Image 1 (tube, protein in one colour):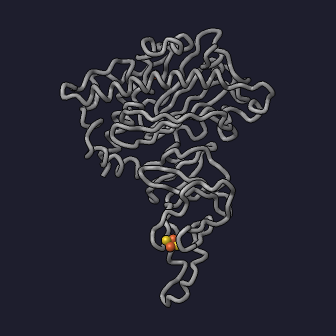
Image 2 (cartoon, helix red, strand yellow):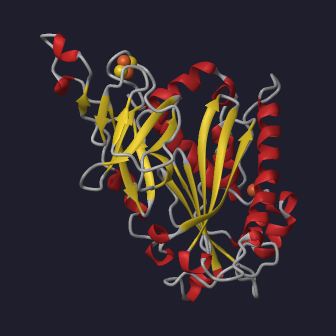
Image 3 (spheres, helix red, strand yellow):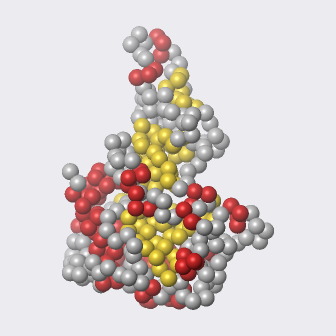
Length: 363
Ligand code: FES
Ligand SMILES: [Fe+2]
């Protein structure tokens, strides 16, 4: 496959980017508080989302649009929802003094506050955050003035319709806590130079030289990787767990597509299922990774449907990756670490580093 060589001369980032509290703080303010972050699959009911050290409430308003709010009461600041409501609710009531909000964030009830002459309910709506959906995926942005999600995702907005992403359902989800900086996990996903050493099973299904890129610069990076002859998908056996997704045909039946969506999501599109990784940085050396395996509801409802081979394959691969990410964090934390040269097979990491430094330097 065609490969644009962009790693020439590029080196890994200095250690402070993986270890310094000051950089971490800057990232929180300039990257995670300003960009659209993947929050999970869109749900029809009220959901809680933890992002950037904040608890957010995501609802749907009367028109069905996603709306996001800080989980903070406008009376005395109490956390409104300690946990996601099990049922669809139509109001959000504070557990302290029962101030009540509708799903658009308006304060609609404030017991006894009529005794305060200056009090007007309309002055105290929930503090909003931006929320929007793409292909059944919910994104939130703490910056209400950020460009719309459609602009942030423009390179892929219509790109994956064949995979019917909007319709897919989560068949399995696993969450991992990884003792490594979030960027090490992005960088690990962005190359297959390590595949022969670390992932012999994966490398049999997709030899590492089969990788190509069709988005090579900017916040969304990645491209196709060709499956070996006779291989149907990325599973333990190499055979598909489900029929190909309805729109996937031709050459796409022989490929997996891998993309990183800066700064919170990986999207891996297989002929028969889609894998989503959600990254949530918890500390400079700690990242939570939630991994979802999505299949079409028609496949899910078939008697005997079993996603186990796809789940086990990526769970094994994930754990292999997290281990080296943790070892990288340990080595980079040494005073002996100095930036090393990227291989040509790591050109997407060099592109990630550029996008990252650009975002970090934003005024
Ligand atoms: S703090 Fe929420 S109603 Fe008083
Ligand atoms: Fe890997």
